[in-house]
Length: 151
Length: 464
Image 1 (cartoon, chains in turn blue, yellow):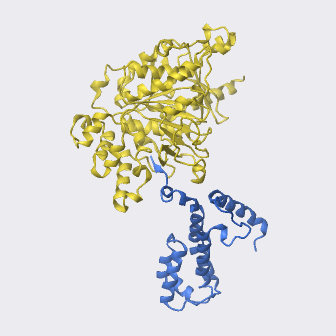
Image 2 (cartoon, rainbow over the protein chains, first blue to last red):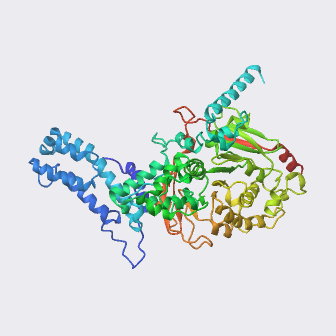
């Protein structure tokens, strides 16, 4: 297990992203002592939930992936959980025989764990980061989709 | 000093000079270069078959990912393609709101606008423009870009970039003013220098440096690398060539369309008092140190000459660095008539911009500047880590971005938001200090300062 000390720096970095992009309540009084959503963001919370479900299924929680049809269905949930920025993961899952076997095989296999970590964690983190950082943009639709103009 | 130490020193000096010569190998094949070279009897008009500097400069600048800067007409065409494919709503803000940035960058005069509106592309005014400009004009004439064309004003524009030091103002001026404007407008660039450092250094291979007549000066290159010595150099070790001017008006008679000029200030301010109707006091003529007029005040006279003398009417951009010091808030009515000069600035700017003069101003603060000057300025560029000015600041008009905008967008150096009234757009530019050496794939190496001194002026000030 990672010690708390090792995680503090990551937490701090995450907080700077969230704090920069969180909006403040300005209207009616809100009880801020109870936070029902992760990072006070329904969208981030929802995405994190989806990602947890995606990872849980091949790991033996929930319905096992028995057939190709199950895998196809699961891959669709991967797409949703990565907001489509899957960095090639879904294609690999659908077309690589090793991956198909691993997904349908023993949920405790180290190969499967390694594969899921390797293929999914990066795109999932990217999707989370993007969602977390994009939260302010509702105020300004212009700025959500465009990088600065390369003059 | 021992003989071997002296030898090492000489070697170090030679290394610095060699580096400078490789880094600042001058581009001599342009129309402007040939016009200003003294070995041939050639006039600008007769050099029509040569390319302009603006068609060459952008090719030497590269993005961090190694790709070259694209010509503007290609960048614009890709904006149109995106709009065509995904709809105007998805197009880049720069394209959807041309008032925000394109209008400030592209300078059209009314006759060009008319020809474009009528689709008269074979009109000589369009057909004879340099290729990099002509292609941009043709792009403007396309039906689907008509909203851009109709947003274009005529005359010059002014963009005011503000931030703390080190956030990209100088590189903004280099790339937008020194690279893009010459490319798309065949703009003439006037860069008045401060003596401490040469902010226009990346552009030096294309620049003529204008030296005040009869003034003694010392140029020194001080590499940041501590193992290299400071070396006294010639201006032409970095700049393409020099020319001598005797007054702002004389300078206006010598410059040509599409030329880039670094201007050393005249410590004697010849011709300035008459132009500005205000006092300019050279160090050798005063009794008290406080009475000496700062060298930067030369800019006022330059602007007045461009506004009134009508010697030169081609699109011109002046880069005004340390703008906050030039036109401060509450200017004093001192021996140098700072108050008169500052209050005269917006008036002169108003006249000059009708005659195609543009200004890129650089300053730390927008608030600490005279209100009349602020009111005259139309475009602002807010750099990273810089709060946009508050709406309540007098003379600023509407500020379309909130104070924290650049922070929220997480801008890094080389990115900024350009805005005017209701519109804003994010832009980015390559780091000019990574410009390629001419004829090589390598970036230029010299890092450090090049400073210029006027020994006679220093002596005169010390003597006070």
